[in-house]
Image 1: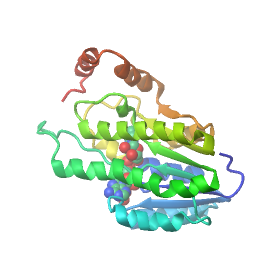
Image 2: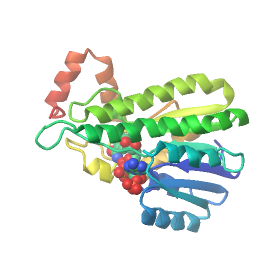
Image 3: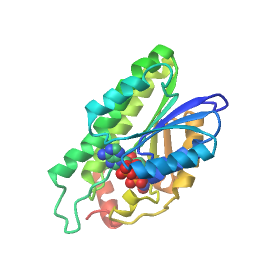
Image 4: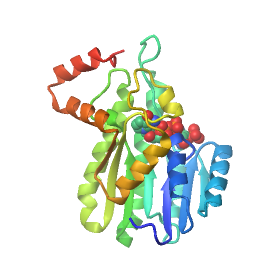
Length: 258
Ligand SMILES: NC(=O)c1ccc[n+]([C@@H]2O[C@H](COP(=O)([O-])OP(=O)(O)OC[C@H]3O[C@@H](n4cnc5c(N)ncnc54)[C@H](OP(=O)(O)O)[C@@H]3O)[C@@H](O)[C@H]2O)c1
C-alpha cells in the first residue's frame, strides 16, 4: 500500500512492544492511526508521541476478549469515514506449561483462545464486509514462527498461532481477486514483556523497532508470509517439513522440550 495519501491504520495491542513500534513507524502526517490496547495511560502516552510525529490518532482502551463490545466498536469503524486501509491484528498473549511443568490451566487456555484466535477472527469478520464493498483493504494477522510446529513448552500458544496462519492463508486466497490483501506475520523472538515471560532459549532476538521496520516492508510488498529472522524461519520451517519423530528429537536436543 502506498502511504502517500491519507491512510487509516488500525493496530490492536498497540500498547505492547511490537504494536507500539509499528504505531511509531507509521506515525506521520497523512496517517490516521486507530490504536487499541488495554492500558489507558500507555495508550495516551503512545497517542501523544504519534501525534507529535504528525499523525492523527484515535484510541480505544478495551479488553478484546469482550467480543460483543469489540463488534460494537467495529460497527462504527466499518462506516466509510473510518474504515481502515490496513488492519494489524497484533494483540496476543502467551502461556506455558509452568515452572514445575504442571501444564496449562484451563482458565489460561480459555483466555488465550479468546484473545489470540476469537478476537482476531471477530476483528476481520466485522471489517471485511465494508472492505469488500469498497474493494480495497489490507489485513495483517500477527502469528508466529511457533505456528510452523508445536513447541512442547507452549502447546496452546503454538496452536493459536497456527490457527491465525491458516486463517490468513485461506483469506488471502479467497480475497485475492477483490483487491483485499491478507498477510501472515510470523516473528521469531522480539524483545517484549511477553517474550521475557516465555521459558526456553531465545536465539536471534530482535528489537521491536527492527521488527516493525521489517513488517512494514513486507506489508508494502504484500508478502503472503512475513517471517523473521532468517535462521529461525529456516529452522522452524524444516520442523514442519521433516518427519515428526525427527522434529521432536531436534526440539528435545536444543532444549525446547520442558
Ligand atoms: N515478542 C515475541 O517474541 C513474539 C514472537 C512471535 C509472535 N509475537 C506476537 O506478536 C504480538 C505482539 O506481541 P508483543 O511481543 O508485542 O507482546 P506485548 O508487548 O506483551 O504486547 C501484547 C499486547 O497485547 C495486548 N493485550 C493483551 N491481552 C489483551 C486483551 N485481553 N485485550 C486486549 N489487548 C490485550 C496488550 O495490551 P496491554 O498492554 O494493555 O496489556 C499489548 O498491547 C502477539 O500477538 C504475539 O503473539 C511475539
